[in-house]
Amino acid sequence: MKHVRDLDFFRNIREVWEFEFGTFYYFNELVISEINEGTVFNWNMAEKAVKVAHEVLGKDKPIAYISNRIHSYYVVPTDWIKFYKNRHQLHSYSVVGNTQGSFASLVLERMVFKNSIRQFTDLEEAIEWSLTNLGKDEGISVEQNKLKVS
Image 1 (cartoon, rainbow, N blue to C red):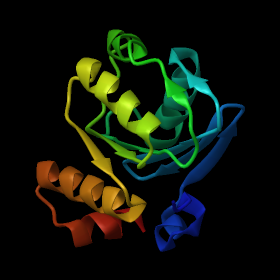
Image 2 (image 1 turned 180 degrees about the vertical axis):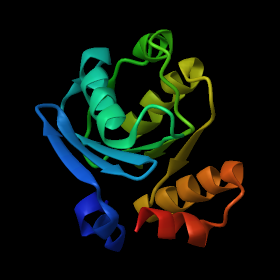
Image 3 (image 1 turned 60 degrees about the vertical axis):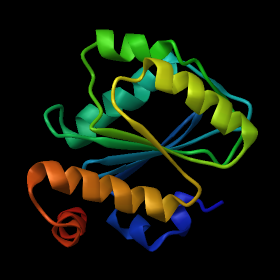
């Protein structure tokens, strides 16, 4: 699996934050996480990453989130409820991974996540889909969206 830092797209980075539970990459309208091996990812951790997203990207922009599951970890799926109770919104959510564990987590997350979740085995495809999806709602092309990020 590819790491975010290994992609050409990384040149568009706004900020990188390394938390004790994983690394979050903040681009314009796009956040990509790489959670550490064995972590039980919960609301307290997510809240830290969301706070940074608001500081870096603002609160009013649509945000696409990609979970780049290069490591095996666990998500507390019911914590999505806390995400919504705090009035946070995601434009889209993608999971990149091909392990049995990532598939099991995805099934549970789909039960509580209000919008659709897309699964990918390639990080670049997930980025392309996220940018295209953001562009559709804004009425701009993928190429224009990439230019906005550059």
